[in-house]
Amino acid sequence: MSDRFRVTVEHDDETETALFSDGECALSAGDATVRFNLGESASDDGPVAGDDPKRIVDLDAVPTDSTVRFEARGPSHGVDCILRRIDDAVVAWRNSCPHRPEVPLDPGTGAIVRGDDLVCHKHGAQFSGGEGTCTHGPCAGDALDAVAVAVDDDAVYLTDDRFESARVLGQ
Image (cartoon, rainbow, N blue to C red):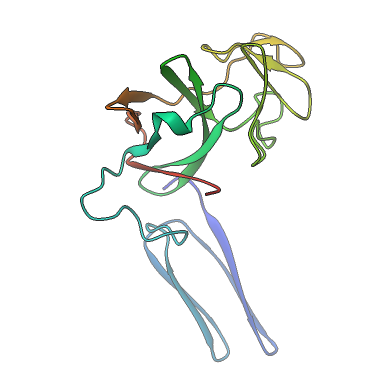
């Protein structure tokens, strides 16, 4: 796992802090112990038995005039991503502006779409519809980080080898 997480447990007058990067972990302070597994998502119970873990959403749920947020999950962590429909095709990128990576293109209410372009709500950068290349703004020439997806049987599937599963965010 490339990401490390700082965990702090405070109990009464005692504080313990440690960095963890993977596996089952436990940290204690006084009478309190926190146990967790960095290889599992705490946000849901995972895919329902029989469901394809790479199935993201029905094609009809992906708008042409905005985006849908989803999390692409790798072996150790998830990545916030967005889907956008262009005719019967769907494109996906990391939900991050190249100018300021901490700024999401979709803050949770859908990204701004002007014509065929996605627009950064914070800086006004414009990204071409299908390619994700910045055509105007502070990161002109840079491109959004593409995430491979495919449409099959009226559903959108994650096909990017960097990730093992996906789930829609904010629903």
